[in-house]
Length: 70
Image 1 (tube, rainbow, N blue to C red):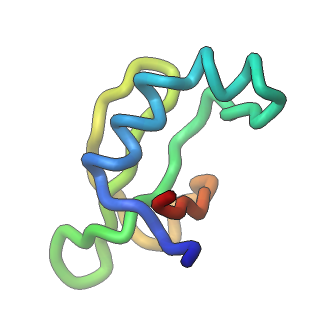
Image 2 (cartoon, rainbow, N blue to C red):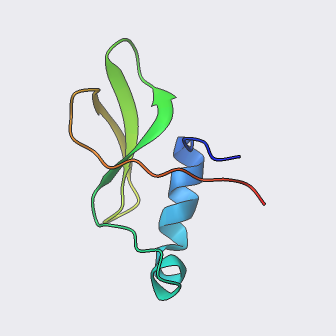
């Protein structure tokens, strides 16, 4: 059941970041890759400092976080 989240799902994670941190599931204030691509060699990510999404080269260092539905 675990998978790489979409941009929309990562934005939802950002929106509940304080709740996750209170539960001990910390979210780093960093960029997190989504499963979405933006052309060959580019992926989309969410900035967990402000909730903005953007794209960058796939070689760019970003965190990854798996999610699952329940």
